[in-house]
Image (cartoon, rainbow, N blue to C red; front, side):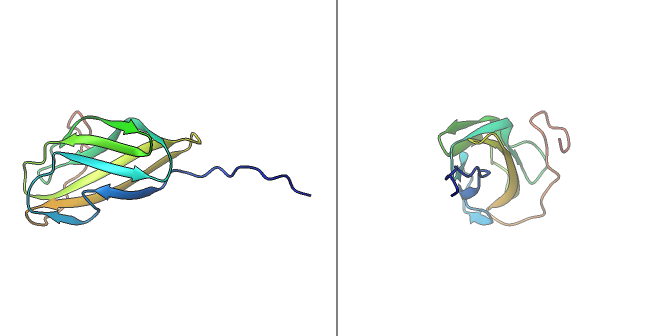
Length: 120
């Protein structure tokens, strides 16, 4: 007979606000990611890059249970790139990316790090 054991699973992104691919009429002041379990940010947690290539995240992400939120400076019109990385409750890392656009869609700039350099 088998003894039941808990199954460890990576954190899965359930939703985001703004939603992936959203076209917004105006700039959001923050981005929130919702996961299927409690998470902690890995590094900055969320890196948002403006259409111009400049960093649009204001500081590191803040975790509250299964939510991860970062303040934004989304004053540019066009498509923003979002990269996220978290450590799940089971200590496994998870990462992904999404986009949202302000006023109109545009090409996505190369991802910037919090210091403004290229991809990390």
